[in-house]
Amino acid sequence: MRKKEDKYDFKAFGLAIKEARKKRGLTREQVGAMIEIDPRYLTNIENKGQHPSLQVLYDLVSLLNVSVDEFFLPAANLTKSTRRRQIEKQMDSFTEKELMLMEALVVGINNAKGAED
Image (cartoon, rainbow, N blue to C red; front, side):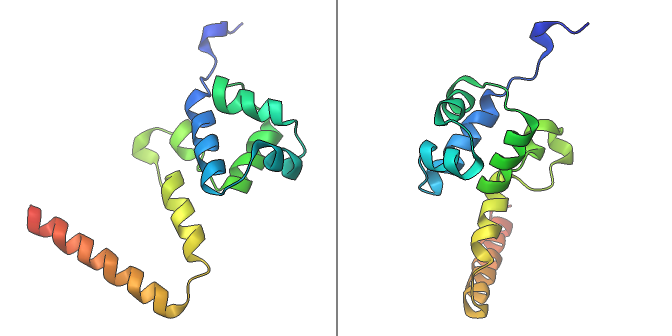
């Protein structure tokens, strides 16, 4: 039988959900209505690290585009952080010209990093 203290601590996950929700300009009430949960349940997930049900976990990460990899997989296996996923989601609506600007920015940043080394 598992010990209670062996349970995964969802506090970091809750904070990531809260940050992603706020970035999208959504209230707890709005998110609750979208995924059909009580806003108080979301408050407990965000602030107290309450363990969400698997369905609620799925609904939250899907809606808010949060990567679960950074919470459940070792850092060495991390493929995409939440920030990277959210940036990529925003870029999905970019025009070709806007993507060219982003590409130039990335090249400039990488060149500047190379100059520092």
